[in-house]
Amino acid sequence: MSAVPRQPLVVITVDRAAGPVVEGEAVVSTEGFSPRYDLDRWTGVISKPGHRLEGTSIRDKILFFPTAKGGIAAGWAFHDIKGKGIAPRAFVFGVTNPVMVQGAIFAGIAITEGWTPDALSEIRTGDLVRVDPGRRVVELLERASDR
Amino acid sequence: MELNDEERAMQRGDRGAAVKEAIDFQLEVGRFFGARRFVPISNAHMMGDIEVMGDAGLSRLRQMAEAGTRCAVDITTNARCIDFAHATALQQVEDEVEKERRIITHLRQMNVITADTCINYQTLYQPHLGEHVAWGDTGTVIYANSVFGARTNFEGGPSALASAITGRTPEYGFHLDDVRRGNFTVELDVDPSDLADWGAIGRLVGEPHQSYYAVPVFSGPGGTPLRRTPTSDELKHLGASLASYGSHAMFHMVGVTPEAPTVQAALGGNAPADRMRITRADIDRVYAGYDVKDGRCNLVVFSAPQLSLFELKRLSELLDGRTVAQGSKLFVTTSNAMKRTATELGYIDRIEAAGGIVLEGVCFYILQDLTPMKQRMGWSSLVTNSAKLVNTITAHRFNTILRRTEDCIETALTGVVR
Image (cartoon, rainbow over all chains, first blue to last red):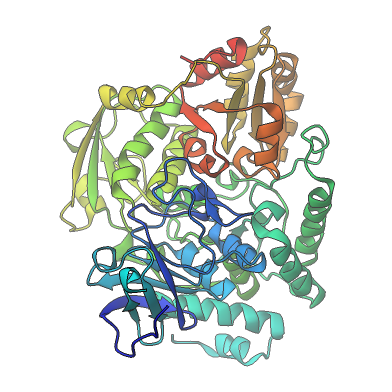
């Protein structure tokens, strides 16, 4: 892997954010997310049959989802998967719901909501990205194709 | 956020470390959503079971209980993952059963009422118009906001617990007038005649409008009231399905819900972003969309939400004198209180005499060890009249099929799904 450039290739502004600054590999989904409906919470792999990320591990990833599905489970579930060592580093949502936010804050996982420009058209799975909640930005550091 | 004297005292730690930890967490959530202040709450409802909490959650709860944390506001628990009377028969792992007992002990130490029900709005507490509460799961939230006109966001377990500890919740989302206004309309040009029909409507509306802030306004054709006013159980299944498929926290229904005397009043000046019309053909297409595979099905479930006394009565009538097919399982889940009453009335005997298994205090999709249970039992397809269950159980890789109540019974009796 080549050295990370200082200047981000793309800067995405987010509307709301909380949690620590993190960097990691992006996983981008065009389908929404619920830890209860979609995730095997014992392995960290998306297990819902037919989910667009079926078979993908979320461990240590930066996850991009357009929407949140459900659900009350995230309140405890994010804390649980963090304890099991299979949590992602950040959730980047187009539109989320309060439980995802409550759950991420409770677990100490970075989370953001709302994006300009549209992260789903700017970021691809495998890209290296940084999430900086304090500055309310998500930055593309390196394209997957260049890594 | 603007804090009053009491909230500042909490934040300083004057009310103890546990209260400080709770309000600090709430402040961070409130700041995320741009809340201006806290609002006092009168009731809370929380999810807290080993299936969703895991060892990390149990450990956190134990620390809180040992530190002397106490809830200041009445708080009840949602359905849990183990019915202790059936844990052995279902081969749920003994260690996890023991952990579930410890969770219950810790919650009681903290002044939590472990009622274990997801139909608190039918059986325990009915908040009034404008009353602020802090509830989860989602089915309880959408019922509170829509049918009672009470005010709550989706509150996950730790968040509802924090609200009960501090007696307040950040004022954002559905605590605010403008978020509660409808923003698209749905004309029901159909007379739904089964709980599954209402769940199918929830899917048709929720799935294409997946957003916490989408608030549908239901009416009959041309904005008129519905031809027949829905029952509490019908609104329960509609709401649970909307919350599941759409992540919705509120709906309006003209002439039924308190903030919707008319379509215009429910929209509150919003121009509808979409206008849907639902007919019988749309609902039939939902049923036709499920893959029945080879037509065999050895698992039928009535759950999600837990069944009311009226649903239990109906099931007992449909099953009276009949027998579940050899090798098939029929599960029913309800609250502890409903099961006791239904037992006294003879409904439970009739369901069990037919071979049905009635679980109390749990919901099927959150049962501990469900994936290994599924493999051991040779379950593949699952037939239910709950649209919510069809959606929520998918991580366990069931082939889920929504059917009307009588069709579900037929599958239970024959082992065949059509």
